[in-house]
Length: 329
Image 1 (cartoon, rainbow, N blue to C red):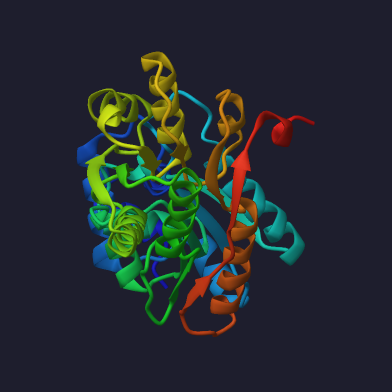
Image 2 (cartoon, one colour):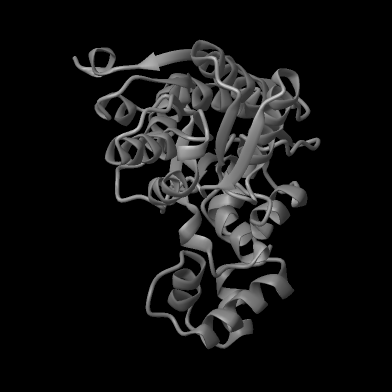
């Protein structure tokens, strides 16, 4: 079996240097990293921690790979709920978990990411927030080197399951409730990220509704940004009878701008975050149990690690009208 000593000799560096590269220590030159990674690849080296886990038939560790919202200075409530739900379920199932973030690997190739995960004894990954343009993450999933569960993306293969609510139907339901309550005939729809899977699904739901109710609908991309939603509202909301937003954060921005403009338009959001209750105006929204969804993903990952094939899993949601009294304790 190839040892770390063999890798060090092949690369022409010290054993401690190989260890630093494999564990992503700072202050290691790019030239040295390239030498070590090339040696690892050429010798097909598997770190001892991974070899030990495989030889003892242990399940290994689970990684939570999270794409935090960088468009706001507010705490990423959804991300924190995801982490909480996963950790609680992992403790219940006696699984070892580490938490990683997309930004840690933004300059890494898929091969480098795979090597890093293997060096950490990772055998299963739950991926939160992958978009259509996250090519490294797509290659990670397609490699099928790990059992994966993807939240809110329809990516399924033999070793990968998808866990999500029905975003198309949920967007349709919350918008229909808001529009019919206010007898609206025209709507401004503020969509999320252009490259997002949920953005496309929610947009399909809105188009279904517009066709069914014969609505006049103007679509604009808000990029899940409160500021961008405010700017769009300033420009277009006065000539529409309702504002439907693909996230609560954008709904908050839209409502704040409507208040500043001193005009009334019904607004609805999507997600059910606590911040919605502090806006001062009640708004309909889709409430997702993010902790529950994350716990369900951990259960699904354990099934994959026990031999089940990948599949699509659809979870429940509810429609709520967020107000301050609902969030205070």
